[in-house]
Amino acid sequence: MFKRLRDKLQQGIYFVINPFVRLLIRIGVTPNMVTTIGLLGNIAAAVIFVYAGYTATPDNLNFPLLALGGAVIILFSLFDMLDGQVARLGNMTSVFGAMYDSVLDRYCELFTLGGISYYLIQCGYVMGALITFVALVGSIMVSYVRARAEGLGLECKVGFMQRPERVVVTSVGALAAGITGMNVLPGEFDANIILIVAMGIIAVFANITAFARVAHCRRLLTRK
Image (cartoon, rainbow, N blue to C red; front, side, top):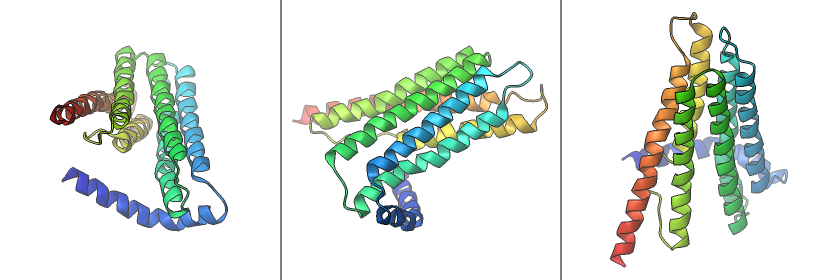
């Protein structure tokens, strides 16, 4: 059921972005260019998180910068969908392009979650930073297990917390924490809890997804 809903949502997004995709193709933009722009945007978001943490004080946790970082992730994560569509509609698919996209996706997560972890450490949330680290481990392992499975000739796309879900949770968590922090009085509510909860969701479900994929591969290999 979830997969059908996800597929329908994806098709709806493609319907909206396809005119822009065709424009990119006409002006000579390649899928690898789009992928690289997405990486640069995620690096920018990570820099925003790091700067927010570096300049944070007990009286000012830089919630506007936190919200900005979340918004930047949302904006440039659209390039995750654009590069694939540019490749498909422009007949520019390639094995190297698929590998390049996958590698840069991992860099995006390393940078953004690393930036959030630094922000939380600088603001005094050591446990929150540790949770973010576990989220990062789970995120990388979800992709690694799939890559190893495909290297063995197995299809391995099971699990809930795949990259699109992780991007949504990360960006919405940062954006919601930043906006909330800007609109509550000090002492009323600790808005960074929203970000930490978002990281906790990824930490739990990404690692569950990674182990679910391992179990899925074991079942497939046992049948052979």
